[in-house]
Image (tube, rainbow, N blue to C red; front, side):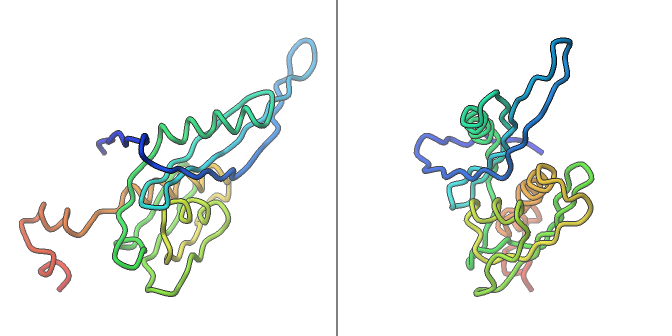
Length: 169
């Protein structure tokens, strides 16, 4: 899949820290403690990304995670009632996330890591189910992979040489 670079200069990005872990490296002189922060950023209007930051202090790890997330932004195809355009699976590692289209008034029905991604992407109505691994990092990345794989009906109609009305019938 071709990656498109998203210009973040005029976006107001909000961030959410999904998890902070203390990691240890055992060396000759003892143990080196560091912190790992998984951060999700989004503009609430169809753009979302996730990043991982590692540092000796928590605020520094969060800052690095935010910078990494901004580099990994993806666009999400949304329909008229702020849901996904069609049902889709997202897969990363052993984590699989099912993303289901939902009617107006459903809200976000999702577990913790997937909920953070959906909220920051600007999705208001969706049903998700995490299948397989429940590792937070893999679930976040699987959700983003699923959202990035969504196709806009106009884009599909153009590829097939049909109108959007013909596809929906």
